[in-house]
Image (cartoon, rainbow, N blue to C red; front, side, top):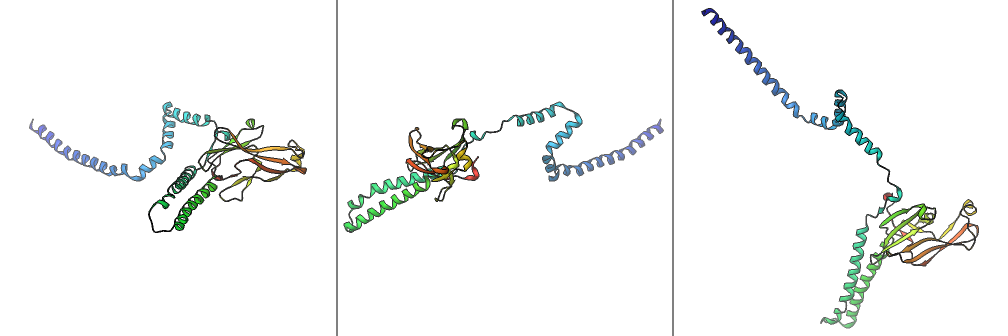
Length: 277
């Protein structure tokens, strides 16, 4: 019985080193593979191809839960109707800037006008002529700057939208909103945009044409006009709908038309053409 026990002990002793070697190899392999899981190249690759990876996994496993969201997203994108041109509204990016500038100019003019009389009240060694000159210079400078701001910002279009043909007598029109010096909206409807031409006025892109000439086909076709005939090209109204002015064309011989202003109409317009819908 002694011999078998010795054999068993020797067998156990021989197997122990083998187990240690295997254990050390296993630890070594894990330590070698651990840094690869955190390398930036693997992370970037998985983020960059996350959709492709999920699609390939879906193809191999044929799991319906993964393919259903992809079909829903595709159907949602295709079912979205295109936005109509008449539903889009152009908004001037400098609307608030012009508004604040006008308010500041009006406020400064009011303050200079209100405080000017104090020049004559305050005790000073200045003669009366000098005081009058100072008061006039202060008021004139403030009034000139306010008028300049109002002239520059009068043509700036804060909003623009297109009018549907069925709302404009069968032809496409335009509606543009500007601001007066006292920041009151002025809404101008241009019933025939072909009368808008490039403006030579500073701080303006378009203007209503002073004279127009129809082509022979237009003057003899559906747009036939008679000498002496008048048409309203554009109208300007306030926010309450009150008519402020009109731009009217009077047709002459050979389709030649001369335009004139009736009342107060906004003729020039400043827009950012790259932002138009």
